[in-house]
Image (cartoon, rainbow, N blue to C red; front, side, top):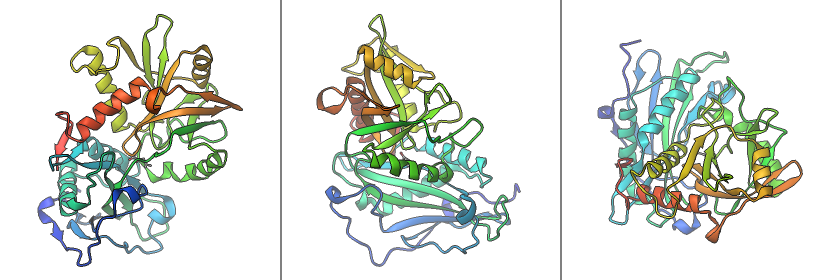
Length: 375
Ligand code: COI
C-alpha cells in the first residue's frame, strides 16, 4: 500500500460554475441551508489511493444504492470556518487541528488517511474561488464542511475499496440565535466507554435527532448528555460544556469535563482552555477576568451543578464549538426541576463574554495570534 498516492494539490482540476448565484443577504441566512457555487471532491480507491482533486459546481453526488455509506453510516465530517477581516483578508482558525481530527476519525472507521496539509491547501483554493461568499457582517462566517464517506458498492460490512472526500461551503450566522436551554436527559445516551463519542462520525449524530425532537417539544433547545449513575455532564452534541463555580474561598473555578473518550475533542474547547491558562499564567491577560482562576478538566456531576445553583455558587455555564462559538446556557431541566443559570448583563456571564471577545477577535483578525491562518 505504500505505493498508493496521497492527496496532491498539484493535480487539482477546476471546472468553473457557469451559472453562479449571487450570495443572499447575511440577515436572511438559516444556519447550513445555503451553499456556495463550488465544491471540492477527491476520490480514493484501494488500487490507486487518492485520485485527482476536482473543484466543480456544487451539485448532487452520484452514488449507487449499494454504496456502503448509505447502509452502515461509514461517514465522518469536520466543521471549520473562514472569516472575512475588516481589512479584506480571509482567515481560518487552527485548521491543522481539524485535519488531524479528520484523520483520527477516518482511522476509527477504517476509512483512508491522507496528508492534512494537502487537503488544507485544496480547501483554501476552494474558499478563494468562492471568496465573495464569505460574509462580511460581524457574527457571520463561511462554514466549511469536509466529509469523507465509504463508497463500497456491496452489502458486506468491510473496510471500503472506494471512498469519496468532499468539501462544501455554507455562509452562516450564529448556530444558536436564541438563548440556549438544556435538558439533562437520563433516558438516552450519546456515547459510552469504548464507543465513538470522541470521533467526529455521522453515527454519533443520527441517534440524537429523535431525542432532540422530544426536548424541543418540551421547550428546550438541546439535550445535555450525561454519563453513568453519577450523571456526569459530557457534552451537548453541538458543543462542549464549561461550568463556572464560585468556591468557598471565593476563587472562581472554570470546569470542563475531561477527554475520556466519550467527549468530542473540540477545537474551540481546547482554545478556551488555552486562553484561560495563558491568562492565569500571565502570558496573555484577559481584561475583565480575575487573575486568580482555577482551570480544571475534571468530571462534574449534575448534582454538583444543582447544589451549586441552590447555594448561589453557580456563576455561569456555557457551550463552546465551531458552529456554536460561545453560547451561554440559561437553564437546565433536570429530574423535574429547572435549574436557573445566571447569565449577567447582555445575556452572558463575565467568563463567557471575555472568552468570546478574545476568540472572535482572533478569528476576525483583530487580535494577532498564531492560531490565525491566512487563506
Ligand atoms: C461544529 O461545531 O462545527 C459542529 O460540527 C457541530 C455541528 C453538528 C453543527
